[in-house]
Length: 253
Image (cartoon, rainbow, N blue to C red; front, side, top):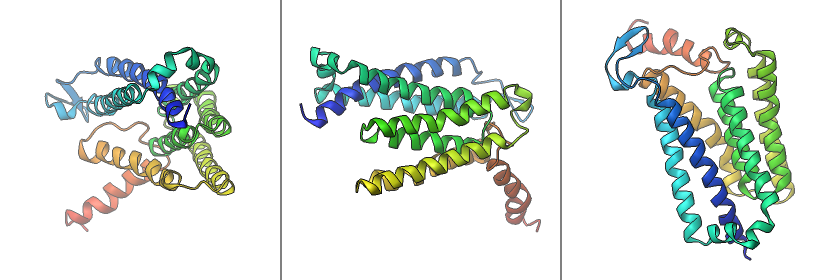
């Protein structure tokens, strides 16, 4: 069996997990009013003021990507392998792989997002998912999973009450250190193995730019609520926007 078929078999199971995760969070997001919502404490009937807009977009895209991945897996024979007797022989490793993805996403959604700066925790999660599962190498998967789980557990234990979510920056710093350590480990491992390809080189850029662009669009474009506005990085971005940049182009400085 060639490597491409094995990867497509793994994509089959990954697509199923992402599909149901997306459906679950789309269902939860559907409970947020899309009209007659409040923006900055003022009632509004405008759809673009709803807090459901960004989650619908994010998980809608994730749902679409899972369907695309599922279709590609079927067309390339991955689904057949995954469901065949041969596929069953590697069920344990596939289960471990899916379990690792589920753990990373759960730690990110329930542990990090409510308590940690959105840009930092999203960069960590994206790096973990790309490098941890890019080549299907088990040590990389374990390292990536641990890099997300450790700061998530710290955030949960140290700042569990909702009243503590926006106060300290200790969990922000630990998550940032975990992201930098994971990135350094990724490059060190790939350089040692002489496998530094375009995916590895682009991972830090994608990991930082994607959440940064998203959070800027949410906060200053659509005027949406941002998870943990007092986060280590976003608080500085928001402060400089309103204190330095906005008055500048409004002619107040």
